[in-house]
Image (cartoon, rainbow, N blue to C red; front, side, top):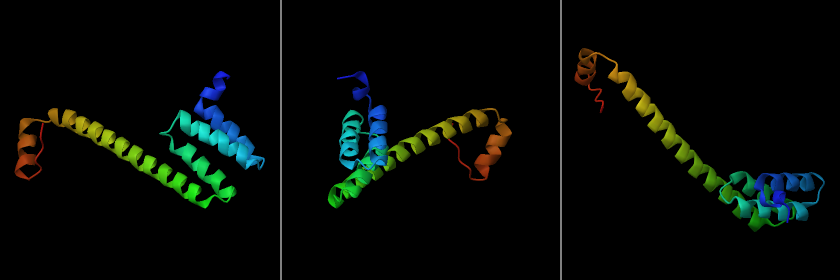
Length: 115
């Protein structure tokens, strides 16, 4: 087996070429392999969905798109959490530069800030 067959992106790209030529069964096999190699990539499940749909495999198509959506939601939550943590750290650094009087005024106004 060549090394490219162990890489999910080139495998999926090869599947895309098959799909564009109407070779949906061949595309499906490559998309399945891409998912096997990288099961956390929602794009590969979207590819599976498209191929299953073209082949009239409605149940499999629905399951594939549901998996893609779950992965996307999970990735969004992770990224949003990281963004919030980064913003919080940045805010704390910026507030640390404020004079004590300004911090006290913010506290009096009810803008409680944990430093």
